[in-house]
Length: 387
Image: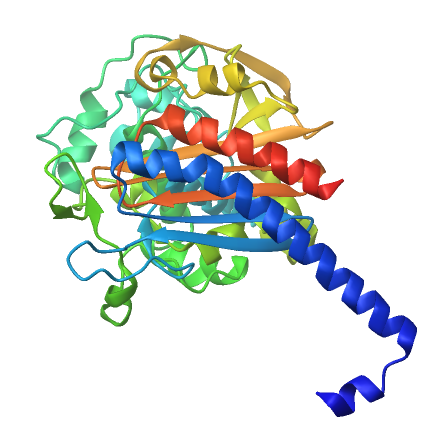
């Protein structure tokens, strides 16, 4: 180290020292903001562990709290695997966007083109874009319990009766985006899990993200905790991979956020695929629905962010207006997505124009409003740090 220093000029040493001091100051500022937002949540909701990752102009920081397992007391790290829940939908959107960019499908296609059993049924009146944006006509949040196999899924969609014409109402739905992701994978010639893990994750530079966690990585997989406070993990279900089945780490997720902030760092088709998920298609009046991500003009008030992520938006049908032409990124936009399973709760938000973003991963499903409030406060600190 001393030899290296001798080769540097005084001016360069001063610049390096100044940069290190500035980064240290930024880290302290961010750590204080995250601590202030996160520690009260963990106490109030008895969250065993949380991994927080933030990015500011390409510099990312990790702040880890608590344990990944109450039984072993293994600490949370940036490499701990958490269940993403519905944040997984952003990956389904990216995969399908990749399929469109590479000419394997068009969002104007109807599902019957890929699943002939749907031809002539009400579900085939919807396009793949309607399925992606929950505007197919009123598909429910979950499949009925009786749907346990691929044959059950086909039977369900073949007899489904819509409550509205496609494109008129948004009703948040796992079967809807699940069929979207499933169809995209069929168009690409494989299962959703296989295509995501073998093609999309590597192209995004994600090395610690999975649908089915391999045995070699089970030691990194946190346990979730629900109402009974017993260790639990998500169980397989129809379209689980497409709608809520990805497991990832804070390190990989902040990498994913950074590729969304600056997709120009990616090559070719995958760059265009990520950019495609930033297009807005339907305006609910509270937020704009895109592919996976939900959009807000930035700066956004806490009240509006809470409204757009409310129970009414998650559980009820809401009228929407189709954006014609679709909304391309213009000005500052905040993109976000919440996600939960029975034992995990997460939130991702980023603002490309400000080059700031945040990932919150926890091994308890705590209320969405608490995630929104914490992230909103932390984002304000990140924007201040970027100035």
